[in-house]
Length: 335
Length: 253
Image (tube, rainbow over all chains, first blue to last red; front, side):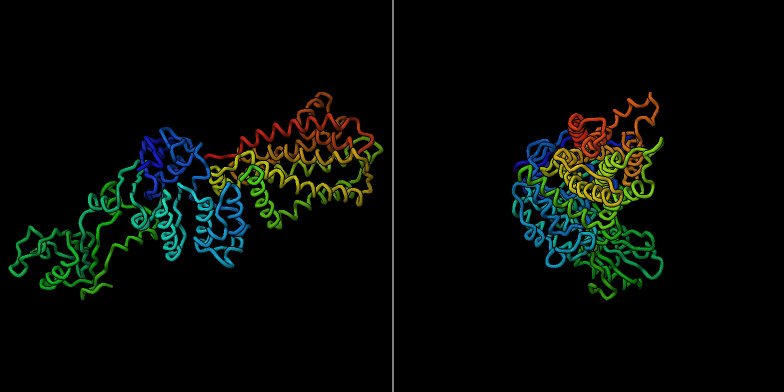
């Protein structure tokens, strides 16, 4: 596989603040690479380094050339805070940016791809909703049909339906061989889209790998979180649930790690088929509980494991991790 | 897309964007009107003694034109640069084939058209409101290159201001601080003999001086200078300021 993008020991500082601290990445042609990290981690600085819009120490190569000298028609960029002319229509904006290239897709075609059609395509940009604006910006990045596409938080402000439409669009681009370098606050987004994910924390790339490999290596085990009606007594609850307790004869197969924190009981290593066993064990001990939440390990757990801190992204984005979560009520049914 | 095509695409977008900002359009054309009304109709000229506005009406045509050639491009390009930077548009354009010089040329051409129309309005108002007679000779057409090159010159300076100032507010403050001294110390409304003798050579340091003197040479028969030498200086300065402005257009953070 040919490397479309290579970065070696990339460093960048703004006065006393280190934005990038020796970042090295290889992205293969046709790959979708997702870069995640909290605000201030250095994601946007890295995108700027890779697109030649900021100067850095270290080595950067895009499509085999220095980013400042790469053939411009082959790359597309959506900057994080990009805001085009407010009083042009999406169609006019696409004509403007498309007009800068030797060959460009028609405004209608690109706008259709991002779901901006009909009246929306003829309204001034400033009158569009936040999600529509962001989709127009994505369309501008796509107008030259680039080989290498940089998207800095492309779905920020887009509603779930629009986000899924954009994900489908990116799936199609990836299937067509476009290399995509994507930054995001959303773990669910990169898990859904990226072939490989990089975690950026305080300017350092702390891990790179496929979502599955990262989760397997660093995500820990699936777990059942039990919200009890009264403060849980670990010694009582653990009896027969964890491997250290004396197991009652009626629970011969149950053996889990149990921890108690913040009034919640967490039972580690519980698979979906074992939830019923745990519920039965709790009921036999007369433990009343309000809810059970079963959670598979996800990229957020990987981030926590690798950096020792929780992922401090926008709360709305964190909610995406519920894709990996199933709430189970006291009766054991999925909600 | 060819260089011409890229410039056309950027020009068209900027032109439409300008026309749809009604306040900007109104005040761009209201500005020359108010200048003529204040100086030409209210203050009026007093060609009998010393002091300000002591020259005949025709003398000040060059000053009126200098106002629009100086102020409008300086503030418009400066604030455009600030607006583009705030919207990460330069970051985006840096990854397209559009060069900095092409971008500045497209913006300058928009200003040439806008200020060309404003200049025509100003000349018409001068004739109607103040009764100033403007010569109608072929040489009068030299107003066109003086205005066009003057606009390009101050667009270049505006781009430099936009680069240096860190916000649209900063651009406005810096533009005013530069434009006001230039306006009154460039042989426009204040005649050189009203200034101290030791200061008069400094008038030659202002690019606007050559625009004003050149326009006066073709609009005021009693003008003391010739048009073509001034046009040559304006052309050279326009090229220099344009080149410096193009380099100043930000493409990286």
